[in-house]
Length: 130
Image (cartoon, rainbow, N blue to C red; front, top):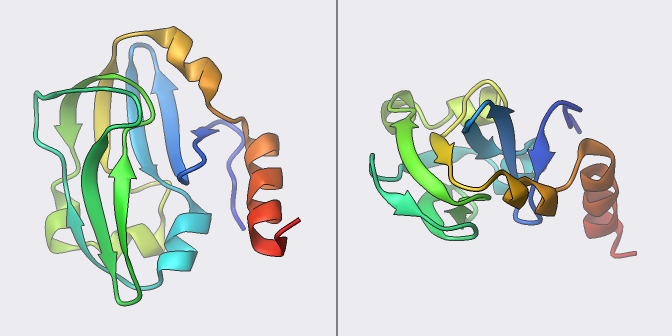
């Protein structure tokens, strides 16, 4: 399983890449591999204000439907429109194919997210049930 060290992660298997006051958000390798072949991505609306933990979209696969949650509060300033016509890009490279960019309201919210080592352990426990 690929867990890049330069990202932060949520317990809902979203990743976040912080670049100044903006954060790219996507789903982790763990999420995309468990979902299977992704067939549809409902993207969030641009310029909406969202809170940390708020649902901002839906990802549908041949096996399941998953809600996408925003790891931090802020304003949606960009969406990856390419996913509307090519949702399978999330299976091909879930880290290169981000879903949305959020202008961060409060950097202290980043402290609630997991670094790669903690997320790796979280995923291991999810797999083994230990």
